[in-house]
View 1: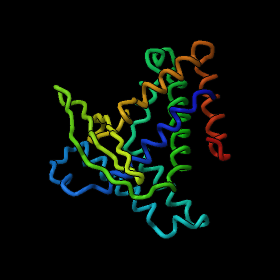
View 2: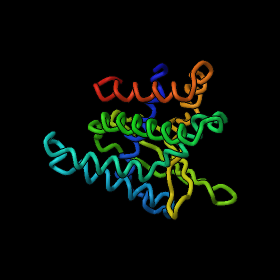
View 3: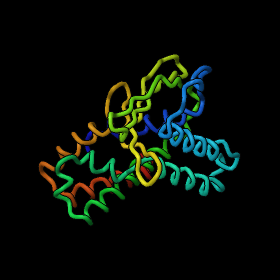
View 4: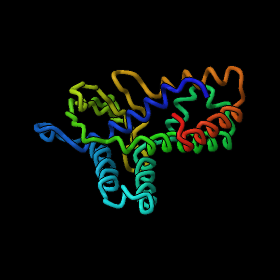
Length: 214
């Protein structure tokens, strides 16, 4: 599957997502919106699993990795993520193809994330603001991550409300949209391949990731 850069972007955004649990002094003074509260709750649960002593032991890690996967599925709306990355061609997918694409895409992203999660080193974040759409149906939570080498990386989480909670549907790292990156990749593939062939390529990439590929 070509164009690996979006996979690295997703790994980065989820890696940086974990950093939100280590908030710099002063950030807590900002009033947390329901969207940010939902984000922080999931992050706290993920970090609790990572910090569990059983996580470092391969024989006892399984249940904790499952908890992390469940939490990622809880905070990320992969159905919304899928439709936005495919773009207008999403309407040409049958309901079954949409379901299989969403499942395959979520599996690929989560497997990529789990392969990278051990690199968490307690990076710090400063909440720099929130932007709410006029109708209140979209919230962008803006942060500034300070990496271990001192580099500062702006990361924004775009969220929407569904089923009584808030979910991430896009992430911007240094103003680069994860959805737009994937959309470019998938549109290129769909110019010469069918939805089923795209799904097959995503599954093949997932298998590669599971075997230690990047």
